[in-house]
Length: 277
Ligand SMILES: C[S@@+](CC[C@H](N)C(=O)[O-])C[C@H]1O[C@@H](n2cnc3c(N)ncnc32)[C@H](O)[C@@H]1O
Image 1 (tube, rainbow, N blue to C red):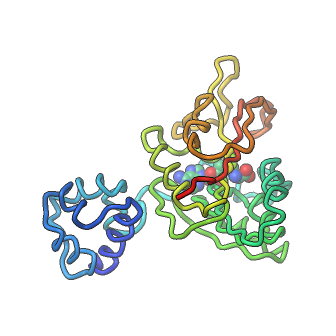
Image 2 (cartoon, rainbow, N blue to C red; image 1 turned 90 degrees about the vertical axis):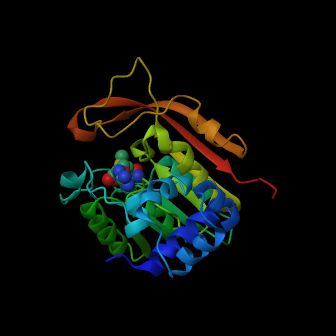
């Protein structure tokens, strides 16, 4: 059953994330600011007819507004691989993760969100290097592997079993990180998600991503899925145009996922929130 108070909390949080006052939002929705205040305090619920517009104004989905979760099934194309004993992506950290650990070596605050953590090779590496890690992953078997690997390494990881699409970040991080995962963000929703990641990064904090880039001379990987969408050269730089770019590179790498040797064009960025507010 719909919980008025929880619904109201979600509306209030999303509104503040967008920097809207109740007055401003009331103009978008053609309701009174008092009505919004009542929703946010859990006294009343909006008419169902207004939900599509409310979701659009708040940059979310109706199912998130109503349930606090995405109703898209939490399944990953890697579920079957992650159920196996061996680690599909190995246990060595990625080069980008190593770069971040070096870069943050002299920082005392190190909270980090790893989006699409897989089986946790980077999340565990960050935790072993004194980061407070939130690992967001859609795959249940992936989550089990992260737990197992972090326990074996005697380190603590806060696991978020969630869908990155539409996921509302609950706090500010020193680092928001992803390696090979953000191709699952649909094109039309990318700008909103990157804006969210930037907004939830502490002043002086960092965002670091590795994404797959479309190149006409590289064949699409054999395990590329229908819900994966390439980036174009320059996309990442454009999302972080107002941040300081510490590192930016495009490369062609060899990969053996699905047991078939192939190549990927990848782009890596490390960008720093140097924006003076
Ligand atoms: C190519 S793997 C990369 C794994 C890990 N970052 C690494 O480098 O070892 C991409 C990961 O994103 C996860 N993923 C896919 N769609 C997702 C979604 N909508 N929300 C959260 N995670 C997702 C997959 O389950 C998979 O573990």
